[in-house]
Length: 142
Image (cartoon, rainbow, N blue to C red):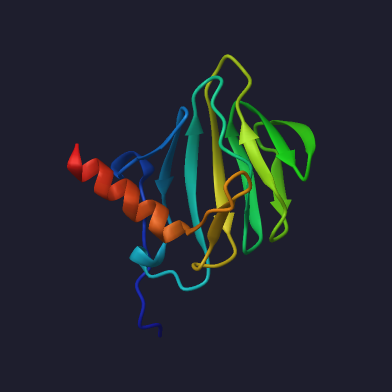
């Protein structure tokens, strides 16, 4: 018998973190619900939205839940459609863009609860936990 409880997470009942540039993230499985080995969530992209080129200290998998995306992975642009799934090794620069006229949503998973994001342009590294905490503080202030 486990000393941990299972969690049921309902995205429509969870806080949304504004990532800027038309992208919004809903963290799902995190340390908050007891995870010790992975984190995941959903990011929605408005038409024309994109996130900056970055890399992580761990493997990442992304599935396109809705719409069409461009995955830019290690300098290569790859068109993706609903259901397509990526696997990106640690330290490989990548980003996702919505160059379509409709909404796009992705489901992402990082292979560790200690995941970090390093922005290629600035070299700034931040833990994913820290990103979520900053967004939570920004929501509280508004």
